[in-house]
Length: 511
Image (cartoon, rainbow, N blue to C red; front, side, top):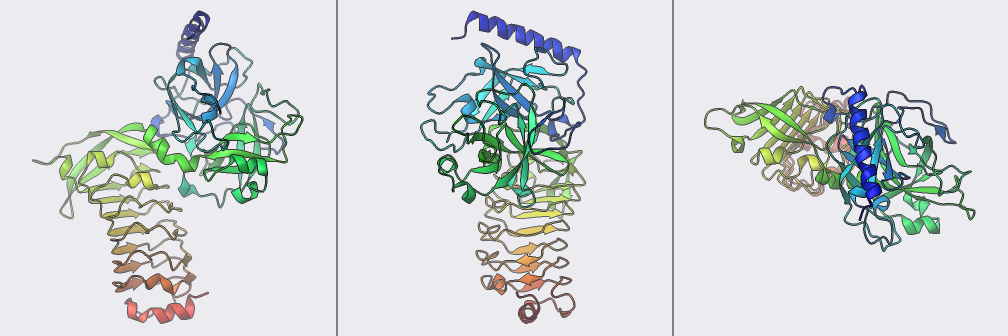
């Protein structure tokens, strides 16, 4: 039961927030719902925790109790109406009942926690909290320590308030060995029960879980859905890619010395956001509308989206506009054809709109990311074509929910490699085209489950090594084209048929 004082305080906070929103000159850019990861006031990072500038990290959120307005946890704004935080912030280990939305508020655009009023900051109120269903308050291990907070309404965006992007598996980690921890954490000269009034940021080196398991205390906390970083804790862990900031981890715990001082020679443990993207997608979706031009394409009834702008994952098309041809409706649409659209991510909600879709095409877009949830729910999908994109990485499970896939075309992009499990759930795959990419090596296990494969076209890559086992499982294979690759371009005969090919690979493309 909330006290009368708390009720009055909350009323005053609402009045204060409304007044502040009306008085501040908040700027919202075009397609604000689909933007993320921008910071307009960045400074250089240091290794001992540097004080953050005002406006530097506009996605930081401070969670404060209504009763006494004390800070108790940090969070990350990931959309105009959602905040990502740790589950233990809302329901700690051993705490039978989680916090309710009425017990805390969210401060966005906040810089100094000790300041009552700051220009550009606002107070938002939780509408709903969702704790991951596998968060276990009775277990020592901090698995699934992640939660979402739904905000009442939507928050206005400005240089102070802007969502971070979500790190997804296709970004990988190979080229990102360090991350930036930001927040109102503690420093090594403070007791862990105290928090900084001003946020700090620090760069931490990410280490593998096997290294973490060498420490008995850390080993008792971590799971397959966590990762470790070397150094003191302080909040979320963020990485920068393609000029945008992504949240990669949520702070769980860090080791402390016997004197309760943070130990910057030990590890901090983070929930790996990458492992929970499907759950996040189910819990919230930023909604947008889409206008289709409907026409016949190769005798297939096709939706051509117009002016579709999507710059972050999990944007769901909730309203479809456009006029069908005579006696046609959404159930007649066979092809979804994105062309020359400003889409870094693919839209969600397409299977619900077009339940009989057979082919999904994306040509001449700035598409940078694809993932499993992009292709979930398509009951009859048999063909996927992505051409002239900016794709570099493709997660191993991207096509797991498309067992009927027969035709896959990933061409004229920047793809560097394929995971050996990419086609493990594609038993019906017949044709695979991946020409004009940046692929250097082909593992022999890639097509081990694709017994119906008939054609492979991978010309104009940078292939140096091709494992001959690549062809042993595909007994129906009759056509290959590997022209203009590093190891075979000058040796390859003019014929492009499979019978002439194995000896050339064995001679020129083996290790």
